[in-house]
Length: 218
Image (tube, rainbow, N blue to C red; front, side, top):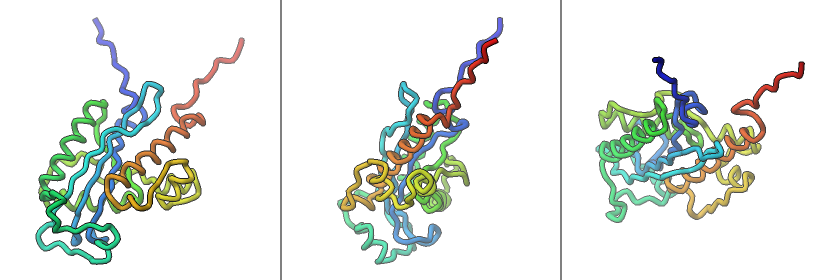
């Protein structure tokens, strides 16, 4: 008796076995090796019964600056984050990333995927900070692909002719409040909406999966 092969889940089939997870970080500067990681948000994505990508759960962690971390005042002024505020309920990098990575690994498994792939707006920035923090915390089981990403700045430039998140969202019909921007959760959720919208529009235009080939009449 032969075993029946099960079809891959819609998510696994859509992205070659990778699970896109949208990430946004808020930091104390631009250098991933020397500057503090202060906030991380990760948005899970799912595929609905119509095969459309949609936003799922949002994970958020406030993070204590690592020992010796650089904090640029200009960066703090930009984000409005007070790293030493007790209201942040911040935790060390290892604790924060361990919780987020554990949840991502569970979602990867539940979607039948083999690995997560980071989606970000100017994704290299978020990817660099996530991997630098994981290295400092000596976290071995990083669920993200080590170098591949999906960058919504590039995708939005292609789809809408604009690479700035706020403007790209407005062009895509996604409400965007500049007063709420530059918090990790808000920016990650808007980036997720933008990514889902572009992927779904591409599907509607017949980009993927490709339309079925109709047999020619004999």
